[in-house]
Image (tube, rainbow, N blue to C red; front, side):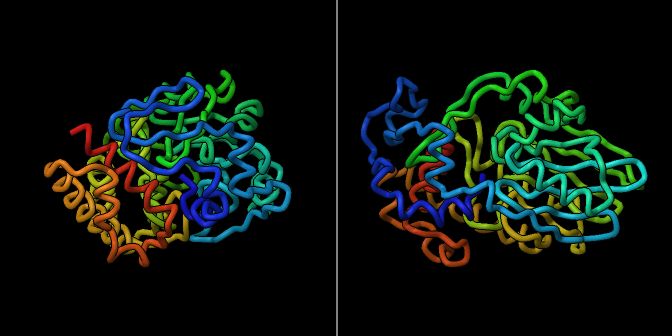
Amino acid sequence: MFKGMMMHRLAGYAAAIVTLTASHVAFAHGVEDHHAKTTPTVQVTPMDQLVQMFGWDFEKTEITTQKLDDGFYVLFGLGGNIAVSVGEDGTLIVDDQFPQLMPKIKAALAELGSDKVDFVINTHWHFDHADGNLTLGKEGSWIVSQSNSRAMMLNDHVVNFGPFATEQKAYPKHALSDITFDNTMQFHINDQKIELLHVGPAHTTGDAAVIFRGVNAVHMGDVFNNAGYPFIDADNGGDLDGMIAFCQAVHDAIDDETKVVPGHGPVTDRAKLARYIEVLSVIRDRVRAMIDEGKSLEDIIAAKPTAEFDEEFQANAMMLPSFMSRVYASLMRD
């Protein structure tokens, strides 16, 4: 979730983020860590403070548009990338960022010929991809998600990034998914066959890939991050093995000409997705071997199992502990 933007901001806030250790500890504010013996103390930062910490400015943020095909676009702003299908049947978008940005998102959609969002598909339940539901649900948009995402939206959850965490509050009724699916679903709109695919726990337990067959494109949400190493929401059921399997399933369902829209970062292609699978598989195998040897999280970070990939994945001193912490937490459940 929002790795690229986030990690560039983090260095300036290092003093506010609790140092990683491998001691037996629990979350602040009475929230217990499910992996308390192997993961560090983190301060649960309120959402409004998190926004300030990241330096997000909703007023100054601009929404930019990239055309990928006739009637098919990607919007970039703060939070997850938004895919847009617009045509005579209406407007369908994938993910919706933040309610604070909705006037700008609507203005961008209006320039594409849209006057209303008919359907919004949430690739998952994290706030930077689904908080726009708070606005669109009130306005009558039909909200669609994988069934596990709707279940997560019903309650408060701590989202643990490793060095720090935040609490995502339950969504009100109008912002919940109206339509859910378990494994697959299809839309037929704007001369597109749109396939929704869920493989299993990956970035979260409720991820959806959205394949637009007519324009040969796929939106993968945060199962695929093209702005750095991924975030695995291990404390809420996310799973590294599952992320690799999910990406492989999508890779096998598309072709070399498919336009791949990641959760964050620029639009790319199938070859980049294949490279992502390869690198995550190597890192997983290395970390799992060290866990089997009895090494701690601190030992594994010191061993630098990602070293030759760090430049390619735009890693920095704050991103790596977060990524490694979530890889470790995921693999410790095996």
